[in-house]
Image (cartoon, rainbow, N blue to C red; front, top):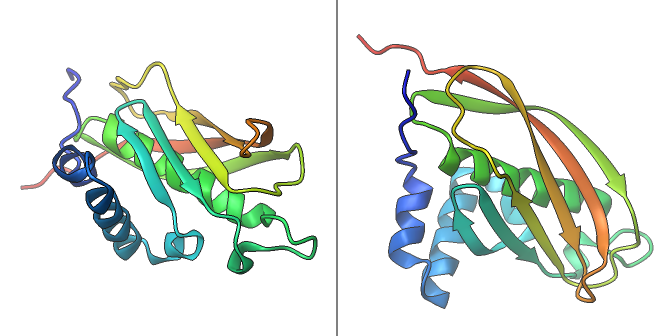
Length: 161
């Protein structure tokens, strides 16, 4: 099977609207409408292209922990979102994906707004396999506060008769 670039709706919307602040907001709202739980962190998409997704989340009361810093699970949520968008727009339309595991490292207390980055060099998967996507989270001072390795299971889409 030869690699066919993704025809992801997310990528199409980003190409149309991503160049404008209101357009990025619309794409983010559409994403959170599709998967409502991600709306809890109010993500702001910054970069959306095959192999590279960046988003930000604000440090705000709704994502606080008992230390008044960004809660670990809010960072897990943001990491899964960035990895999910990254694989969705990078994977051939012949395949589907689902997260099957996440290993995380909490490196520093997250005391500021955060930037979440999922970047992969190779994404021309041509067979069903498990792949690991690394996600790093940085604070406003560019300190890495969190790292996740998210394992995605890739499988062929069912044939449509």
